Image (cartoon, one colour):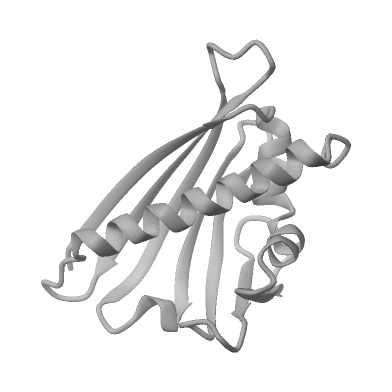
Length: 163
């Protein structure tokens, strides 16, 4: 089993705690509202939303996928770190066993307004000798960046939300 890793960073003007609350803690409520054309719903299948819980993302009819299940491995609201694993769903395809994600949100050191740096690492655990193509990695990075920008814009337009 091979592992393919990709990392990316995104800097934004939102405070670290607001971004973490929106992007991670309340994502099951916020993301379907921001992306109703792609995400039908997100609900907790097992647990209370803390580490060990399993959430299921249900995609809309026109989407390429039907659903994905994520296990929350770590949720550290004090240090703004979340680790979770996609454990099931047609998004994994036939060649990926699981995808382990780690999201860290840190204060941007050069930002006067309280901005942050969102850091995400994804580890694709492959079945056999399969390797992900470069264009698939690029598409994945663009999707993640799109979600980050969407959340950022929502928070900029609604300064009272998650304040």
